[in-house]
Picture 1 (cartoon, rainbow, N blue to C red):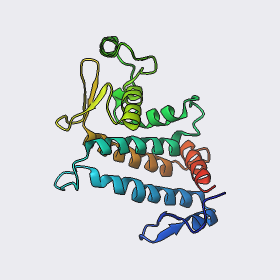
Picture 2 (picture 1 turned 90 degrees about the vertical axis):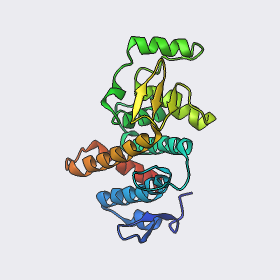
Picture 3 (picture 1 turned 135 degrees about the horizontal axis):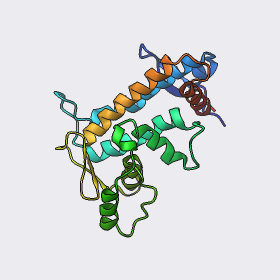
Length: 218
């Protein structure tokens, strides 16, 4: 059974509520994606942002762990919007969507890990299978996203607000959770800007986001 038409979907630019049935009746695919973007800005970014330690704004609660977990959820959501239907994706959908977004956080994240770091990582966690951790983005998925979501702890990736952004240690990675969330918001904006700027009929971002909305409305 589909989500009922009267279910809240999000809000428009004026803050007026939008229902699932209203989005289903919308035939313009660009407008549908605009409503999706507004939904994510209000229900995802806007609510999680309350946990973020923004400059000159007191946060409501000290919450680096919840912020880190919700950033990972946000990354995977954005990945499903823009990369779920990527022809290059492999069978590991969750990791592909996550990694495809995190690759944009820093140009070094998509580069192969050097031999020295891999050796230190294996020495620190000799019982782990590290074949999938070929890049920092993949390391973040396997030893940060997975271990936080399933065990509420880091394993090879740790949090430290004293760092400006991130730093590599002796076989581990240290990430500032506020930088991690702030960088997600920037990448979020960049993806939607790229989607709207590309007017080609075969725009892969437009195609993927349109399919995502259609699946959401089923």
